[in-house]
Image (cartoon, rainbow, N blue to C red; front, side, top):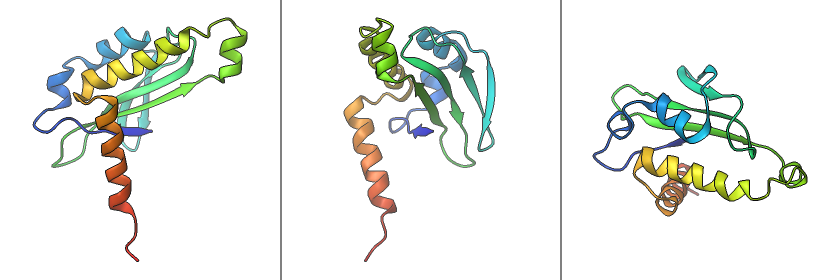
Length: 127
């Protein structure tokens, strides 16, 4: 499960007031919810794009901090997708993920990558 921060001064509930509807627009019908570390996240069991097997997404709330977007994309093996003749769906899957994350966080892929690198560097022990 990855958690994404919003851009400085922005909040998830402002960027996506109806998170469930946004998830359905990008990935398909929400079929239920799942608890992850005390956060209730939406589950899409049968995503529209055949590359995805299952998607779990929602707001991760922390006391005194801004909400983060928690997302887990379960993808099918590339060989299976290609064997079914859905190779072109891979580009659509990447676009759907990036567009969703950009709309939710206000950060493009490069900005999200840089932020994740900094988080890992901050956690590294000092020798």
